[in-house]
Length: 103
Image (tube, rainbow, N blue to C red):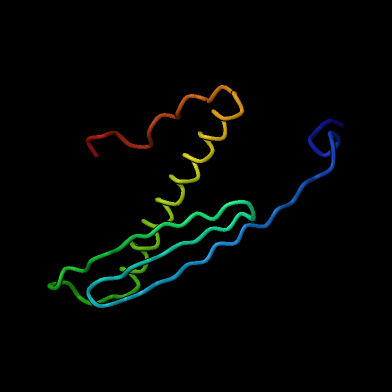
């Protein structure tokens, strides 16, 4: 039998993600803080409700949090790219975009 488990001990880590929401109708703000034990990354995002739309706080929360998490994901990818460059490894080419620029 072959596999990663046979190659050496398994390493486990726990990262902590804290999410803070603030709503001041019609605006919702989200702040995401990721602590990896070695690094702390933080992102912020907002959602703005059109005053003509019904007030549904969950929608603003979903948009603000989703945007903050996407921004955090971009930070993680940039950090990994910097780490790859720092150790002299070859970076894999970027995957094809999930959607075209026209969408």
